[in-house]
Length: 587
Image (tube, rainbow, N blue to C red; front, side, top):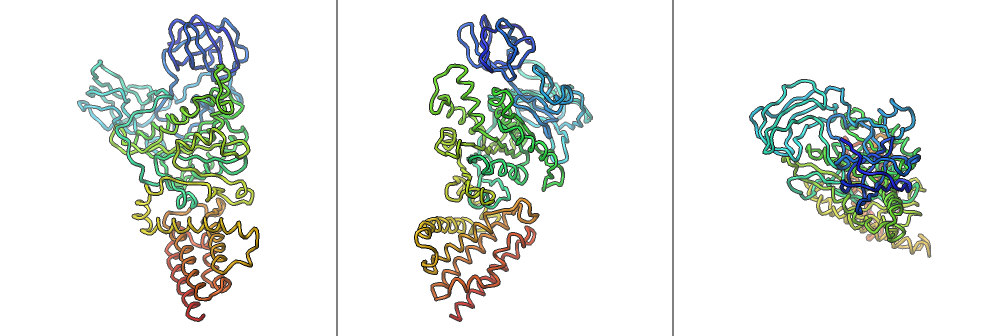
C-alpha cells in the first residue's frame, strides 16, 4: 500500500519538509522515516511537500524516506467503537498499553477496531434486494445500551447478490456482495471515512427538539436544540469540564463522544478514571456503553491535537447516520486553535491576530457546521450536537478564538469566575449567556411541559435584569433605603439563583431535574413574585411574606421534591397563593 514518494529535506519540530516528491496529493496520509511515523501532507509546492507529523519527530534526519499511501487520513468505523479510548488519530490507547506499557512508542501500529472479536450480526436485507447508500444492512448488539446498525457505505448502491445468515462474524469477514454499476462490491462490518470530509445526508432539518440535560440553568434559561452548537467559554477553574461531564452523564443524547483536546494530563486522567465508573441513569448500565473517548493531552504531539476534533466529529456523524442523537464534547477548542497556531508558525505562514493563522475562522466554521439535525441517507432522523469549551487566557472573552466562535454558534454559556469561586455550579452567567434556540424549542416545552413556559421564562429573565440594575444602587446606598417592591425583586432573584440555578451534583434529588420539575419550580417562584407584588401594593411587608410556611417550603423544594413527586409543586403553588391572599385580606 505504501511506497516511497520522496525524502526528508528539513525537520522543523512537528513539521517535516520533503523533496523529490513526484506523486502526492493534499491531505494524503504518509509515513515518515525508518520508524514510519504517521503524518499528513499539508502543503504542495513543485516537488516539495510539507507534512505535519502526528508523533514525536526526535531522531528524524534529512535523507530519510517518505512513504505515500494514496489515501487521506481516515478513521475506521464499525462495531467496537463504543466504550473505546483513542488518541487523536484513533489509535486505541488500551491496546497500545498492552503492547508497549505506559508510553506510546513511536511508529506503533495498532488497529482501531479488534480484528479477532466476533460480533453477532443479523441482516435486515435479503438476496435480490436493492440497496441504497446509507441503508441499514444489519444489526449488531454492540452493548446493552446501544445497537450498532451496520450501514451500506455512502458510495455503494446496487442489488444484493449474497448476504450471510445470522451468526457471529469478525469485522473483516464478508457479510454481503452487491452488484453495483462498477461491478461486484464486497461489504464488511468495518468501513473507513476521511476525517476532514463531512459524511453526506439526505436533508438538513430544523432543530426543534431540545437536548435535555437535567441542568435547570441550561434547559430553562439557555436551551440548546438537538443538532445545535454551543460554546462554553471560561477562564481556568470556572467549571468548563464540570459542565461537560454533567452533560455527558445526564443529557438525553443516545451517544456521547468526548474529546480531550490539549487538556492537562492530570485532568484527562481524571476523565479516563471517572467515566468507566459512571452509571448511565437511563439504563443503570456503565456510561461507557454509549461513550467514545478521545484523549489527546497537552504533552502529546501538537499535530495530533489538531486532528483529534476531526476524528471525533467523524465518529459522531457515523452514529448520527444510524439514526442516533449524538452529543460531542470538545474540551477545548482553544487548545486546538493553539495547535493550529503552532503548526502555522512552523509552516512560516503570515500570522493574523494574536499569532493565530488567518484561516482560524474558516477552520472553526468547518467544525461547527458539521453539527445539525438531519434526515440520514436511510431516511431516519439523526443529529450531532457540538458543545465546545473555550479557554480564553485570563478569562478574556474578547480574544480571537472566543470572538470567532461566537460567529458560528447559537448558544453561549459564559462561565463566571465569581460564581465558581462562591461554589455556585453550574457557574453559567445569566447576564452574559444567551441562546438562539428558545423560539425553536418553545413548541416542545409548551406541548410536553407547560403552555406558559415561554411566558414564565421571559418573566424571570426580565426580573434578573432588573435585579442586576438594582444591585448597582445597593452598592451605593444599601438595601435598607429601598422600597418594599424593590426589596421583593432582590429577594425573588436571590431565591431563583440559590433554589433554581444553583444545582448540586452530589445530591441524589438535585443532581438532575426533569422538564416537568423544572417548569413547576419556575412557576412557583414566578407566582411568588406575582402574588408578592400584589400583596406589597396593598401594604404587606416583605418580612410577612418571608414568614409564610410556603416560603420556607419553596426555599428547600429542590432538595425536598423528587422528579417523581413533581406534582407536589402544584400544591405548593396553590398554598402559596392562598397564604398570600389571606395576608392581603388581613392588611
